[in-house]
Image (cartoon, rainbow over all chains, first blue to last red; front, side, top):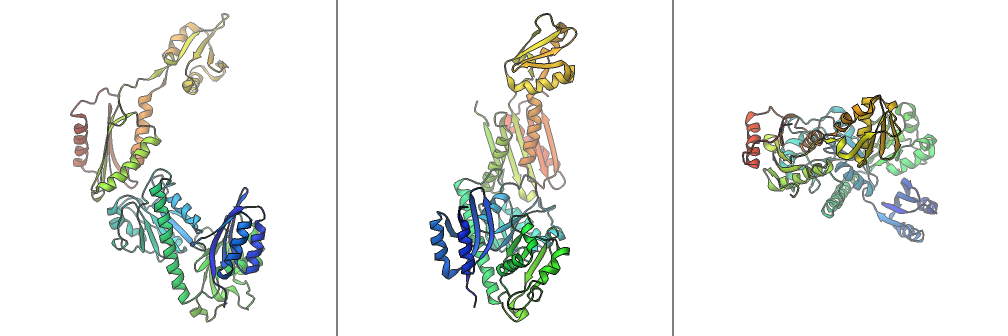
Amino acid sequence: MAAVLEPYIYEGGIHKHGLLLELLEDLGGFLVQKIPAATEVTLIMLIPNKDIHLMEELAIKLLGKVKKSPLTGTEIAVVSPTLAYHHLPHSACDIAEFLRRGGANTNMIGLARGMGRRVALSGDYERKLINEHDIALFSFGTFSDCIINKKPKLFEGIDIPIVVTGAPDIKTEDIPNADMYIGGIGRVSHRLRKGPELDGLDNMNAKVSEMVDSVREEISKDPLAVLPARVMKEIKDQIPEIEHVLTPAPITIQLDGLRVKLPYDEFHGKVENIEFDEGPLLSEVAKVMPSKMKNYILIKIQRKSEVGFVI
Amino acid sequence: MAPLETFVVESTIPEEAEHYKHIISDAITDLVLARAIEQIKVVIIPEETLFYMVIVLRGGMSPVKVSDFAQVGEGTFGESEVVIDIDNEAYLPQLLENLWEMCGRINVHQPERKTVSVSCENPLEHISEIEEMVIEDPQRTLQSRLVDMAIRATPEGFRVRYHSLTGNHFIFVATEDIMKNEWIEEAHKTLDELTGGEPSGSSS
């Protein structure tokens, strides 16, 4: 039985951070993302839960901090009605930044015609793109009438859990098809930095984490045939070209899959033929398909009930 | 006089109006309009997809001429040039642009930070012309900022718009459905309430 992995973030100096990476590898954990910034480094990791104290002790020696990041390993779509300055950069970008601080990978999606009440609508391509993520977070505005009566038509065709943010205090049940409503974060034209605004964002991270936990729990009832983090490690080992991809997260982990930022036509064969030590190929335990985002590769891992075994 | 004597935002639910007030005040701050606006009233009724905004501006902003911030005189040593000594550098870029357009770039020199000289045939004839040149018209830049602010403050989907700018009075009505005449009348009535039925002042 594989060890239970817990998501953590390390924040500290770049000096000697290689020691942490070595320890992580020895313990059987996975590095999800490494973000160097001048003399600082942020490491997003999955650590076996029995050995977390070892990492914490080493982090203290290196004068850094290890803290839990419940959103690690999720890819969240932050959807705003359009890309106009009515919605961006505040508050949608602030929302995305806060989710990233929690460890999530976020993609900002501005709909082409999502503005207004009667005229708001979403396109087929947009819906398919949103459905590739783990959670869709819709960032709405000030008026409860719009959020309750008009905007929910943007949720049509979205199969993943839907989180809605807005300014008024309303109940989730009042919004048709929404799985969670978070109030206190409406349309603003300035950076969210005042006390109540930051409290609202903290509250949002806590609630989205709850939702991620419930999705993880649901997955654990019929577990994935292989852990996404394990697939990531095998891709790094077996497809050296991934090292030359310049995007911040060349392999993005999702709750039930991965997005690999390599061209589909050229690399899908190599990805399908990734071999695990236990024997099976990746194509036997997962579906490898073209992503709607650029020409990337999307991998969705199958469940134990579908393939009959867990690696 | 304190800026923004009246700043009212009304909506079906008062808390939502309060929240929307922050959006509008951010737009006013971003576009540096606080001193230019005397009164502002905004009404938003989401159920009817109606947004209207009535603004009373402060008057009395006259255009800035060269003579307001510089001394214009003849060049020394009998050279055929006009020399402009500037007191306020804020207007310098626009002054240079205007002079380049008028006399050609090759004839305009800036020997010192606050001195501009223009080579020309009969300097004495040009002095009064340059003195009267309008460098900035605050009323005009104000209008463009005002329109920008109105569009920023309006909910994005409300693309059917009516606007009227008479003198110091600005009315902006926006919706996403067909514009109704009674909304425009209502906005005009609100303007009358704000001004107490006074005429709009100088026309621009």
